[in-house]
Each structure stands twice: as structure tokens, then as C-alpha cells.
Amino acid sequence: LSVNKPVGGNILVLDGQMPDFSIKEAIHIFDTGSYDLVIATGGQIQTGYFIAGYQTMAELTASSFLQMGFDKEKIVVIPGGEYKRDRTYNSAVSLRKWIEDNKVDVKKMDVLAVGSHARRSRVLFKKAMKNEYEVGIISVKDPAYNPDKWWKTSVGVRTILSETIAYFYVLLFFND
View: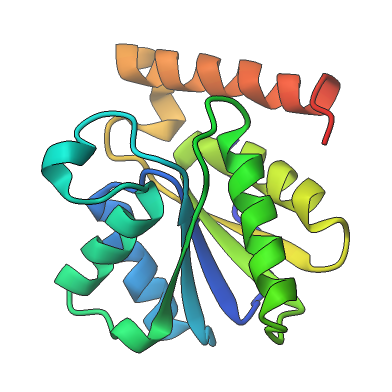
């Protein structure tokens, strides 16, 4: 599930709730790659937005980038709506609309995801992009469990089982 198949696009996309370790890795990937922009997408924060000061995961992720010293001219925030279902897909649709509305020169993009969420993220972003853009994926290792021995921890078992079920749901039942 933790697939790595970047296509070397000119934008690096982070969707949804991104932990700090993944943002640090994204900055490293951006700095060593040929990316022009980081795109932070994500819908409304469900808990804590009154005290956090941010309404969306996209805003929170972008703020974390800036706190880590990232150049504010190289990050774009594309907030999603209040989606309870299909959050990743809807974030990808918002990104596609932003690219089209702003006539951004994008042919390829790499989506960064944490661990086993990567394969599902790639499928959903590809569906949302409707074959107009090539979508690659970069999976950042989740330090909560060893991906080679995921069955040895409860968090590994819960994560892999949940993502496997969600992946097959997307393949078998998801309609865009």
C-alpha cells in the first residue's frame, strides 16, 4: 500500500492532515526535486478549529510549512469544503479546478501521502484529474509502526487493515 512512484511533476501536493514529520520530509523532497510549488489541499478541520485559528487542513498544513521556514511564495493553499465522505477525492477535484481556473502550467504532479494511504490517494487523485494530468505518488514512512512488520503493533494492524479495506472500496465501489 505504501507505494512510491513519483513522476517528477512541477508541483508537490499534500492533502489533508499532514503530520509534522511528513511536512519536514516534503520540504526535503521539494528542495532536492524540480518542483515549483507545494500545494496544500484539505477540507474543514473537524475538531479544534476554534482554538487552532485555522478552518481547513490546507491552511494548517501551509502554516506548518511556513513555521518550518518554507518560502511563502512557493506554497499555495487550496481549501476544500465541508466533506464528510470522499475527502481525498474532493480535495483533488478542488485542485483540478484551481489549475484550470488559474491556467497553471501543470502536466505532472506528485502527491505526498503518509504510509499506506499512498496507494488510495494516488487512485483518487488520478480519478479526479480525469487523465488530463499525470499523477505520481510519494509515500512518507509512518514512524508509528514498522511497515515491514506492521502486524506486530496494534497501530500497524489497525492502519493496514483500514487502508486495505478503503483501497478496495475505492477500486470496487467508488464512483466519481
